[in-house]
Amino acid sequence: MLRRLIVSLLAMTCLPALARPLPSVPARFHLDVVTDQVPDAREIALGPPGVIFVGSMDEGAVYAVRWRPGQTAKVTTLARDLADPAGVAFHGGDLYVSATNRILVLRDIIDHLDDPPKPEIAVDHLPWKRGDHYWKFIAFGPDGLLYVPIGAPCNVCAVGHDYGKLMRMRPDGSAREDIAYGIRNSVGIAWPTGATAPLPLYFTDNGRDGMGDDLPSDELNRLDRVGQDFGFPFCHQGDTPDPDFGAGHPCADFTPPLARPGAHVATLGLRFYDGPMFPAALRGSVIIAEHGSWDRSTPSGYRVVAIPLRDGHPGRQTVLLEALSGLTPLARPADVQPLPDGSLLISDQLDGRLFRLTYEAP
Image (tube, rainbow, N blue to C red; front, side, top):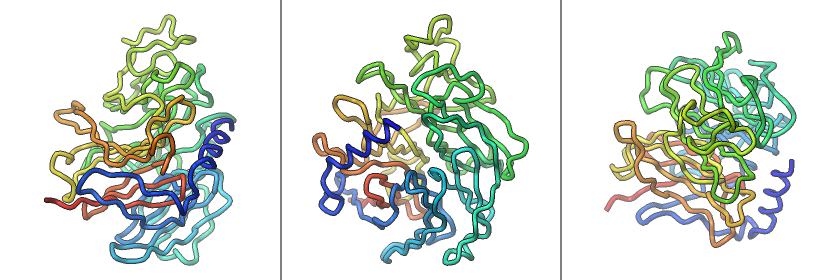
């Protein structure tokens, strides 16, 4: 709750939404606002062409955005009064929505955008404890299973195998399986474009607070086999023992991150980019939304970055969107989603906007 209060105060000290300039983007890139009518925008899921789904946080709502390039977006609220429905995933014609300790489903949603059905419970009794990190990014893998992170209910604490993990299950919640541990708070899961196997998968993880401005880094991780442990709460960023829990748990015992995006940048949604629009050097990159720091003396994050992967190794990241003007946030990116034409959707929780990033080749 303290974090939410600080973030709310931060937003209040910014310029009014209507007066806020757009974030900056590199030369030859262009940023447009698809809509500013999706309050508390978080995860993005694509439906059939022309339909975009967006989850929210404190707003408790789920939205459908009907839009094609050159058209005015039409936003419909599909559900209200849900418990932090940050995560959305479209699968088999149905829309799945995370809601703290359960996953809800809106059946046959495309035929009912204007008269949405009442959400049904698809998955119930997920691990939940009052505290931090109970909101969820959800995704369906190439195997048709639903992947659900279970965040640690704390800044840093001993969680065993009950929390701080990644689960997968059938869409009805059966056949649940823990597949990764040692994860503080993952709010982004993705597979390489065209993947046919469930592993490897890639996910972001937010580093703990309270170790200073520059430690530890958030993480981009790769899961190659079921049962890997990524170190929380014992080891951070692959090489930094926790001052309270690290004794007797050497970092060599855990899987190190694939890349370190930076301390307190709040890495959230990620997707692989293989579209036809952006420069060729960005194809095959992981694109990550950085929500931005909430307790750093000088803000960090508030960006969208691309990390190229060549033969499994990360290269130097490219900033595709910069939403800090001095110390003032202009947006809080929460998720990214490539469109078939190669442009990129970006959700902004600060002002409830959905951006579209395009590129004009020389």
